[in-house]
Length: 163
Image 1 (cartoon, one colour):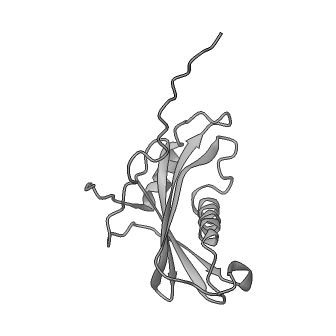
Image 2 (cartoon, rainbow, N blue to C red):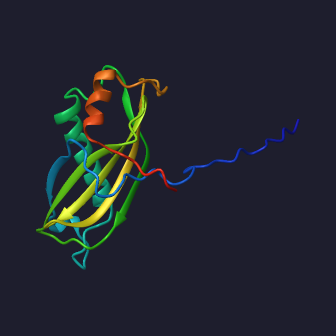
Image 3 (cartoon, rainbow, N blue to C red):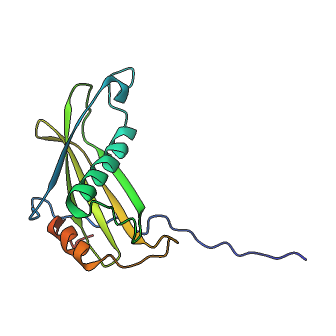
């Protein structure tokens, strides 16, 4: 017997991610410095673009462990990255120090965005974001604990309502 399946339309990115308002500060901003080494660059001494995604993860883990919950809520659930994006503004090179600034935006009951700004000597060299969803161990979405939501909102930037 031949069964005809109707393919579902899969949408990976339903519209653009919300954008935080420029020039607005949160009550807190997490900062972490990363040094660039030769292993982080190509033959032209440009930093590999993949390093910025790696650095997003490093900053995210350091911030969460240091500022939100040192046990990473492992007994309660898991964090799932739903989206990740990185924009490059200018090149970086070995032996520069990159300052990562991390804030949250659009904090909801079960998810939030992280905004990453990477700077060298005060100049933005790259920006990125992650949309993070909190789930149970079986990957079903669940609410973040209230005390964690309070901490996440301390780092929150308001978002733009324009499209």
